[in-house]
Image (cartoon, rainbow, N blue to C red; front, side, top):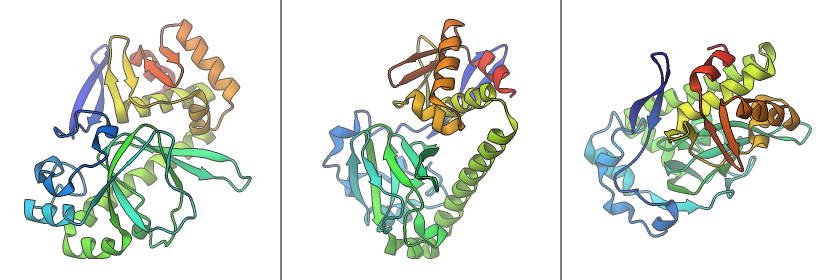
Length: 264
């Protein structure tokens, strides 16, 4: 994982984390039978759960992992299901979905490659608090939840860095709650798109593309607004040259102006 800067105009940049392990140059579907025991520890050492561990410690954790892949749209686990495993996302993006008391499914956040997820034992829960859906093809490593406490106890850096990541996710969700209660719809949608390109943007000829399939319905769920409003905004922005929006694909063509719309 490395941090890059994407130029958004007038001397301003978006800082993005990119996770591109050397061993995973092809689509996740090519790794149905990946051999975990042959993974090099150096591929994982930059990642938060492993960044404070030495190579023998990383090797010990890897040797207890199994690999799993998921097709786009598949549920890795469902909200309320017994938590049996926790995961490290090697390739792809996770969409985290919560069910409201009214039964409506809402996208809570997206998790990019290089992070742990499904870490119910970190919250001292026996069931998953949300549904994890593959926003794109996924390649993961997984461990039984029975190993969570030993990992935290035996490898202090593992727990320290993981709880920092949890704190960042909680802060992101709190910020979104504040946005929904204090900002206009246009600001919320602009900030949601900027957040996504910051997490998983890739530079293209058109601009900065969100690197996983995303629909207007997804954006409406993330911003607490209607599909009609999101469609109207994106259509207007497309005519104005701010974004390019096609089926399950959004490209931010003019990040600087989108930053201004978001009030950043």
